[in-house]
Image 1 (spheres, one colour):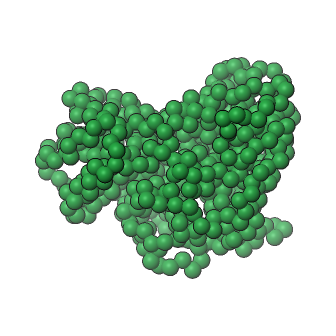
Image 2 (cartoon, rainbow, N blue to C red):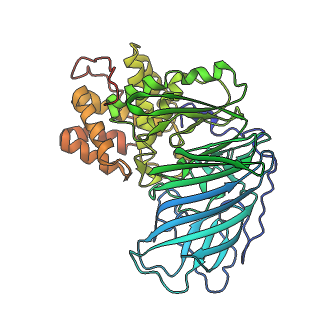
Amino acid sequence: MPAAGLQRRGRPALALVLTGACALAQTGAQTTGMQVPATSPALPTGFTAPSGYGDSVYPALGDAGLDVTHYDLSLRSDPGVDRLTGRAVLSIVARQTLSQLNLDFAGPQVLGVKLDGKAVRHAQVGEKLLVLPPVSIASGTAFTLTVSYSGTPALHLDASSGGGLRLGWIAQAGGSYVLSEPDGAHTFFPCNDVPADGASYSLHLNVPAGTTAVASGVQTRQQTGGGRVYTDFQLAQPIPTYALTVHTGHLQLQTQPGPAGIAIRNAFPVGLPGTVRAAFDQTPAMLGFLAGWFGPYPYPVYGVAVSEDPQLPALETATLSTFPSRPEAPVTALHELAHQWFGDDLRLGDWSDIWLNEGFATYAELLWAEGQGEATAPILERWYARLKREPARGLIATEPAQLFDASSYFRGALTLHALRLKVGDDLFRQIVRTYAARFSGRSVRTTDFLNVVRELGSAAAVETLRPWLTGPALPPLPEAPLAQSVRRITLRLPQ
């Protein structure tokens, strides 16, 4: 999400949904469609209260006993109808002995659940789908869980924005889009909705003829029949649940070859003004530039999908960043592209380390400006001035309101700048590329990055970062000359 989202994220989005009434009929329990209240509904007989995955910011989300490796999602939707029919097949490995499975799901009514093809007892309670296997599942066992459901996606408001933004599957008059960060994915499919548990995806989208559906991943099939269009997508690399996106509507797909064999695919609403499309003209150059700093782009395809909603924030949804239908600066497009490395490929092990996403993507903006020959001192001064207007804190977030505040973006970026000044350009690039390569497809914590800094740099380099990381006081603006003369980076992706 771009730094500009600091201003926009809390604004109520207009005309997002056709209906906001999302009270759902449930199987064996009742849900409000909102966050699980402090006093949860009574559990049906035989079920126990779930304890969550253990994330420090969203402790109620997820199940620490589940490792979901793949989601196979079949989704049917229609423009102008706030209703979704779905079937989710989850491939799971038990991380511990399981007597109950606890998935996040605040979505439509569950019609049935099968464990390895056999029906099992289940209940929707609050924003959880609880499943009772007939016998306990041993640690290390691989199994599949199939959930069929139909109804209105849950109304789930973003706590990190003060409740001003609806998350998840959003219906519009002409189609729909998905915007889930940080915790909206479970409004439309059952999942382990924590970034630490990444998974690959297969998507099977069913929309009326005349409607286009596009999603994260590579399109593998499309066929028509009975007045419907069926389009499949495959994403082989694991991503966090919030990074998955689906867009449907009257969309025009634009494709072109990119560097190093990467396919560039954009989805624009028909009639979208050129002033909005212009922000994405430099995508091929940006891909090559960022690869010079971060290493090879981690996916086979990249592009953007523009929603007809002009008020939503941009988001780094995997392989297909989501943007509003208003003109954006090219640097915003650059920011979301940088997140494909930091946030999507390297996913958070805990939401408290969100600076590893936003700090890296924000610093990429400075690298790009520098590569274009722009002066960077004003950028650094602007970041620092913004931080001085906010209460100072260390970089480790402790509550949802801190996830997308000025510290996550600008203090995070200045932390990286302080490191670069300490070690010089060449070693800084080596540290970043090593970090990106070593943890590709894996979850990361702040200690993982510091270990790479210590290994390739020095203990002194790590200590340079401590005041920025721990705070709370704001350190002085890093202003020392770079250890090496700055060179314009024009590297391309390796062939």
